[in-house]
Length: 139
Image 1 (cartoon, rainbow, N blue to C red):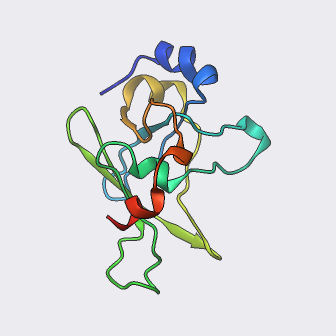
Image 2 (cartoon, helix red, strand yellow):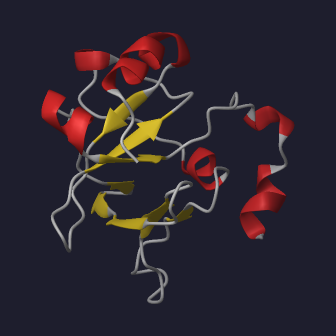
C-alpha cells in the first residue's frame, strides 16, 4: 500500500505521526513504517523512542525483545504485519549495552511516494494507563 505523501504531511504534526524506512535485511526492500501517537523530536534527538507494547497492541505485530543470551529461541526482533495485504516485515534488533534497537533514517521524497507502508502503531489514541499491560504481555 502506498499512502499519498499529502496525507502524511497533512497529519504528521497534529497526530505525532512519523515514518522510518528500514530496509528488509534479506531483500534490501525499503519499507516505510508509520508510527502514530509517537514522540517525535525532529533533529533535536538522534534516536527515536518506540514503545514495544504500543507496537504489539496494533494488528498482528509482534515484538520479541528478549536477547538471545537469555533465550536461545528468541528471534530478538520485531515482526510487522501489513493490515492491508498481510505482508510481513521482520526487523532483527541489535544491542547497545542493555538497549535493543534497529537502525533507521528519515525517508526521502521518492521513498515516500514509491515505497510500501506498514502501519506500526494504531491511529487510535494510545492510552496505556487504561490497559492491563502486565496481563496482556503474558498472553
